[in-house]
Image (cartoon, rainbow, N blue to C red):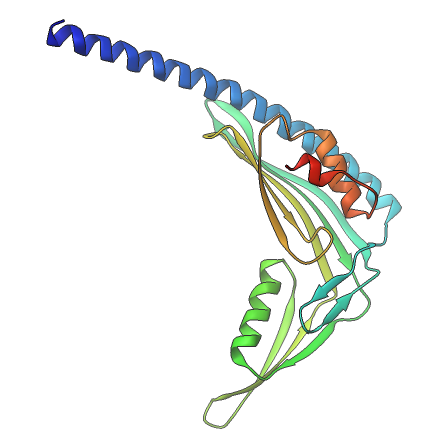
Length: 215
């Protein structure tokens, strides 16, 4: 085989591979769109029902070395989404389901270490909690202590991000049964109303099989 024939064969192989990759990409795009839309429909209806029922959270949200929030009342339930333009279509970019739980009293603590105060603040901010800090300093500006007041509000959030390039959906779960975040990468087949149902059950303290679905 001559050089030109060899190059022609390589070019045809590359074109075939590119065509197959695009076919898979477009197929995955459709699967992700359908999965995201079904999840949004579930959470939209869930938010409407929770606004009427107004449940109390069964979970205990502990703040490390400070205290805990218990028996929080639901004050907000909302489902939001954003689309983006891709391949000439308006496709889901992300969907979010958010519930806010409100307690009666804030938590307060005194940090005599600047690094401890910084660590506590960063952890709380990461999980969407709100706080106020009052720093006491010496005349020379040296840190003495920080008084931190943590608002009695805990946001629970499920966020689904469409990753069309890989054909996956990224799920972030925040403050489900305690203060913390979990990340999961799902196939479109895993992102179903059944999964949304198990997330809702776990949030409301009902028996669930969430761990099995997220394996």
